[in-house]
Amino acid sequence: MFENILYATDFSESPFMLPCVGIIGKTKNIHLLHVIDEQNRIDPALFEPRMQEARDFLDEELNIERNKGVSTDVHLMPGAPGRDICGIAEKLDASLIVVNYHKPGGPAGSATMELIRNCRRDLLVMTMLSSSAVDQSKMAMEAYCTNLFGRVLCPITGEPAAKLKALRALKEEVSIGSVTFLCFSDRVDPVSLADSLKGLGLGGGVVMAEGTPRKEIIEAAEKTGASIIMLDAGAEMGMALSVVAASDYPALVLKHP
Image (cartoon, rainbow, N blue to C red):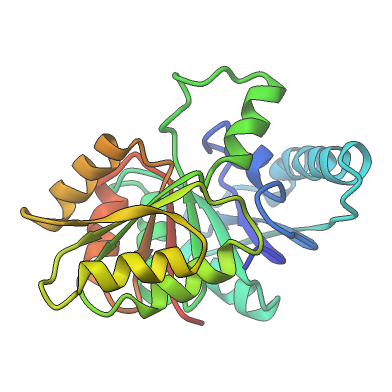
C-alpha cells in the first residue's frame, strides 16, 4: 500500500505529515505534488523553492540518514486540485495518496472530499490532532509516525472482508498494535470477527455500536485512544465523508482501486 506514494501538499499541513511520508511503510517512490488552484492565478515559480525544500528534506531523511533508498520527484502544476491530484495519481499508478486534513469550507477541504468521492485510490488523510500535544522534536515526531497504526479503529456497517483484507496487507508493512472493530450492524457476528482478528495475529476487540455513526465513531476514537481511523469509502461512502469532515483523527480511507 505504501510502495508508491503521491504526497499532495498545499503547504499548510500538519507538522507530522512530511516526516511521516515514507517512514510508515515499505516505500520505494514518493511523488511530491502541489496543484496551484487555477482560479488563484499565482505564478507557479513562487512555489518552486518550497517544493525543492520538501524534496531536499525527504532526500536527506529517507536516503542519507535512514538509508532507505527512496526515490523522490516533484510535480508542480496549475489546475483543479481534487481533479488533478487524482489524475496524477492514476498516471503514476500511485498505491496511496497522502493529503492534509482541512475542515470543509475552503478549497483544500473541498479537494479532500472530492478525492474521497471520486478517486479510486486509497487515501491517508493526516490531521493536526497531536500538534499541540506531542513534542515536535525529531525523535518524538518519528515515534509518532512509526506508531501511526498503533491503535486502529475500524467502524463497519456490513461485511468486514475489505477491512480484514486491508489489515492483512497493512501488517506486512507497518506496526499495528491493536484493532477495535466498531459494528453498526447486527448482521456482524462479533465472535467470528474477533476470531478473524486473532487469526491475523492482531490484538484488540469488537464493540457493538449503539448510537449514530459519526458521533459514536469519534467518541469511540477518544475512548480507545485511537491513533487512526480506518474507513471503507468503497462500501461506506457516507460514513467516510462525514467522519473525515468532523474528526480530528488521521484516517486511512480505502477505495479498492
